[in-house]
Image (cartoon, rainbow, N blue to C red):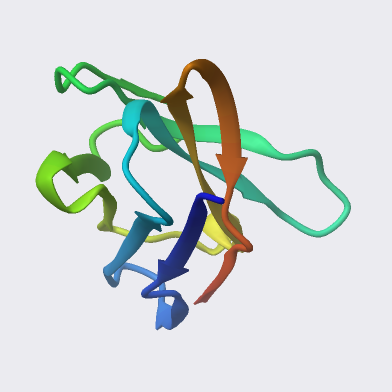
Length: 118
């Protein structure tokens, strides 16, 4: 059973930075893409950024130029460097990973809270 565990959330003032990490564990497997999504209170979950196994990235327009997604394939870990944070970035951030174990299975982490104060 693959598990994704996020870390690095917290409280930060507007303009500050945080770095989120998400590590996948639970056996031997290949990971296709990994990504970060977020969900603010009363809103739907939305895409933040994704990265393929080859390093191709995709970002939501609202975070382009401020957030950077990266991954360490050897550690099965994805990171999200968040700079110039705004109060509207406040949300629970979830990572996901598409794992290849014969078939493709999408796993989600439990989420980590990011709160940006004005």
